[in-house]
Length: 303
Image (cartoon, rainbow, N blue to C red; front, side, top):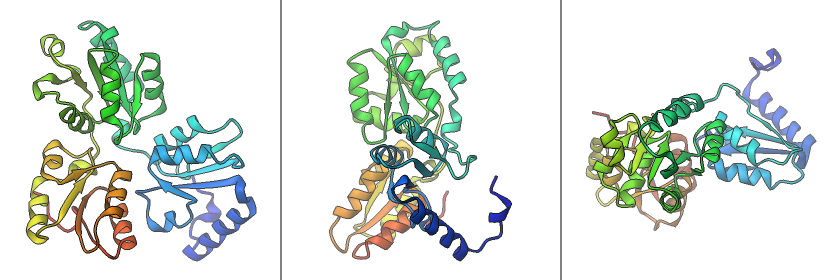
């Protein structure tokens, strides 16, 4: 809980206190701002980016004693994993969580693994956990010969897994898994949820956990069609956590960092419709005034 002395303070006074603290601590403090944070939070960030890039950047600040991660719980855990022993990671709101991450808990995944062991040779099953997950799941993958992936390197982790086994058990995001499977040429009939029948599991290459991102599954085909009608010639780019039909209907899909790079490298005057978290889209629009940046959500109605 916030100290009572902070409750009710105005924005100006809060800003002054933060700036004083930053000045007093100097290089002993590093503030990380995830891309999805609001501008008033990003304003104080020493680094901004996605969870892995921020965690890596923080660990490289050798003089930093305090790492303040303006993000959600799994991000702070990732920073703690990579941080040096003398560094302390602080999550400003200890209750800040990710609904998708909360869909897969270590005990449940462990139980699923044991159930799969009754049907399959688990020496041939390689677990892959998405970066957007609790630390206990990353540890689970380590114990069982698996790997942690990001939304940008997921195809490479599939290659890595298939060089070591015959099947992948992927969690928690089923849509990133499906979109990656399509890239790697895995057919729909070779993809099953982990609790499918023995016959289906034996004949599949990819076993899914039923998880999803509520932000990215909000986007749909109707929104893309409306965008193309309203902005003829526009480019549509979405995150690979979106449903497969949305990714297929878009011009590009990419991680958070990938979307940022796409916008930066786009030609002047280009119209880009983006399907990801709204704070990032608004910031990209502000920072790229020579292009027309439009959010896929917020303007178009859902079906």
